[in-house]
Amino acid sequence: MNKTFIETKEYKRFAEFCDACIKYKYIGICYGAPGVGKTLSSRYYCNWDNIEKQIAYRRADDIGKDATDEILSANKVFYTSPAEKMTRISSDIHTLATRIDMVKTMHLVFKYNQKEIYASHSYEGIDLIIVDEIDRLKLQHLEQLRDIYDRNDLAMVLIGMPGIEKRLSRYPQLYSRIGFAHEFDNLSKDETHHILEYKWADLGIDIKLEDFSDYEAITTIIKITKGNFRLIHRLFTQIDCILRINKMDKITVEVIEVAKDSLVIGI
Image (cartoon, rainbow, N blue to C red; front, side, top):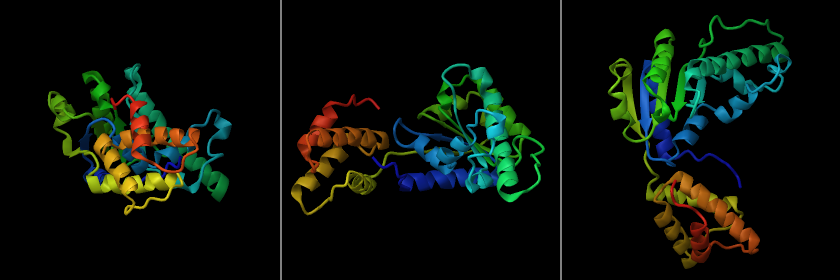
């Protein structure tokens, strides 16, 4: 199935929130229920699917070898808080920023014959660090993030579950630096409808809204998923399997119900 990112209203609101954090160099917090699209949106905003591959070199000889010009505009770091070994947060984020600079430099050397000149420090040229799964972190780990923020001229966005803003308010040293908060919501009914049209197209199936069975199928999916991005994706993965196994080319309510039954609807 195609993995085209769809820029929803929620994504655009999130991007505006991140832009504002960068403009004012604030720490921002973003919270929302599981599966609404926080992580996907963050990775897309940072162009991380592309950048992550380019900085994942194994040996020094490989630095910049697979880079594209996209690395030249890389000015954001996306980091997922680990479930364990949290003491390494500072060094992990530092490594990501350093690798971006090294790959950027070597790409300029290889492709444009420029001199090998590195940034004076790791975070030079980095405007924003997004830290996902912030709920996993304890006070001492949040202190590491505060220290990175205080020492560098950049913005930071912390992403977590609803209630994280209340939890962070217990840490006044960090909380006093938070300038913006953003709630990431489920998709509206209209947007879910729009995304379902993409999903039908991904499977190579025409959708005819005047056809009652298509209308019924869409209504059923909206009711099951309640606009949850991750649940829509998981449901369609199952629908795709069912259609292929049964050599079918139409999404019906029966197909959707079978797909739903094979999912554990905990997101």
